[in-house]
Length: 99
Image (tube, rainbow, N blue to C red; front, side, top):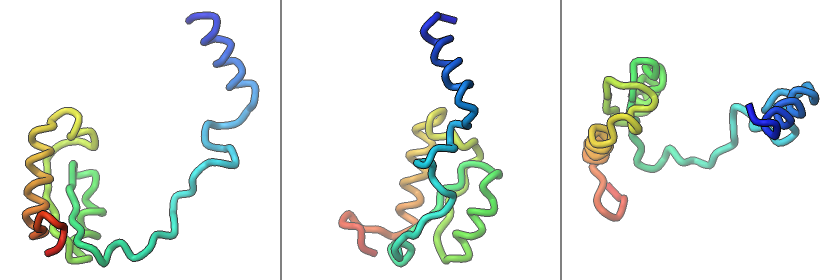
């Protein structure tokens, strides 16, 4: 490890703080305006996201399932793009975003 990296690593350890313990860390929730009154859909990238896909179905959203991982768009960009297009088609969106 280069000397500058070792110094930076040592400084990070010396504070005793975790990476997200600063006053600027984000919480796990946020107040969001009524965005779900707009056309929505859910692209499920793996079985890991089954609870979120079920929540989307319960909201009446179309769901497109891809048998991949959470990084599927990185590893399979064409298949991911096709899935997004299928989701848009399922949402029956026009070019201007209104159904």
